[in-house]
Amino acid sequence: MSVKEDAPAVLARHNVELAGTGRPTLLFAHGYGCDHGMWRHITSRFSPHYRTATFDLVGCGGSQAAYDEERYSTLNGYVDDLLDIRAALGPEPVVLVGHSVSAMIGALAAIRAPAAFHGLAMVGPSPFYMKDGPYDGGFTAEDIESLLALLEVDQAGWAATMSPLIMANGDQPELAEELAASVCRMDSRMARRFARLTFSTDLRPALPRIRVPVLVLQCSEDIIAPVRVGEYVHRQVPDSRYVLLKATGHCPHLSAPGETAAAILDFVRGLPSVDAHAGAS
Image (tube, rainbow, N blue to C red):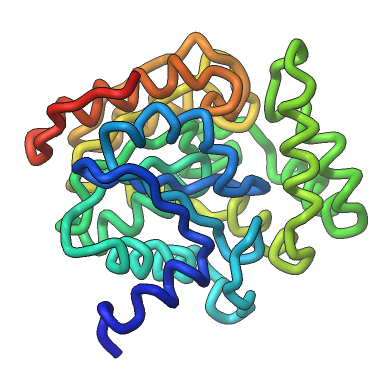
């Protein structure tokens, strides 16, 4: 079946929302426990000048994709979905903005199909969440197993416990509440299995293989992806820029959208393969 025939079905299946008509297209991929609506403060700043596309990962938000345990037994199933969506958007390359685990899904997609992407903006990326020799991803194996064990028995309790820590913006409690509600809406099987993939997959070997320009956006205080991890990603990716945000927490597109959008805009404008003549307000 051709991409042209399948494109409307692909876009519907992943709840793709489009806005704007400018070039290039910015494709936004959300992280674990989130949905496409959490990009709203960012996309509203870009859509007057660029085309923006947001979507929901399988099992999240309004995605109509069936959760297939075999397809999604590794992150490659999510990579397949991302490349299907990118193809359905048209023939031109896109700038992918990936948050958290979707930053790494985007990295795998860019390795597989570099011509499909002008560049990759990685928001809070982590290639491996555990400590391993001199590498410190922030968690021990025991920490991860404890988190996964709680999620197995009490998804709502996991969301209530983790969301304030992930957001780390106590003056904006509504952000943690939004994240907790989003986690609770996730398909329970997907929530458990995707969490294990997210927190236990070691993608460090993939970083030097990325051949598109990369922006590493790092928050100043982030227990999920600490500063040392963002610095590690920057060192390992051949063509990368590193920006340390003043924003705290793991979701700067919600807690500090202006600062986050400005860094992404600067990156897009600097891409050599993009005619990025317009800017976000």
